[in-house]
Amino acid sequence: MFTYARNRVEASKRSVAIYGLSAILITLAMLLYIYPSIRSTSLMYEYADALSEKENQVILNKKIRLEISTLKSYDFIEKYATEKLGFTMPAQGQVVIIGKK
Image 1 (cartoon, rainbow, N blue to C red):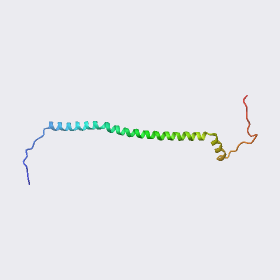
Image 2 (image 1 turned 180 degrees about the horizontal axis):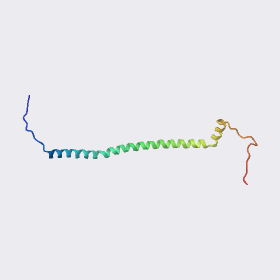
Image 3 (image 1 turned 45 degrees about the vertical axis):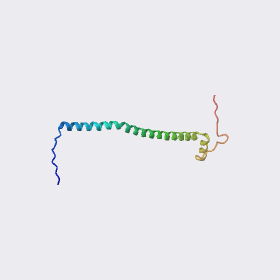
Image 4 (image 1 turned 135 degrees about the horizontal axis):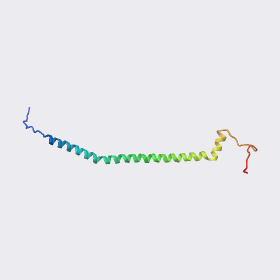
């Protein structure tokens, strides 16, 4: 239909190389500018996860310490021995106490 007669302009190899190099340098500068903020954001998420994990471990530690103290109590040991293991208190004369010399 419509054709426009334009003069074709040849781009020199030097100008194409300069434009290409400029585009690469601008892209690299943008990446170097953006990277620290992306890295700091990811580090903040890792820090929040670590704090949450620490809180969970502290709670678990408290529970385990409570369980250990319960298992070490003499009342628990006596109750467990009589009810679960079927032990009975020794009769008079079954226990011999040896004194120090």
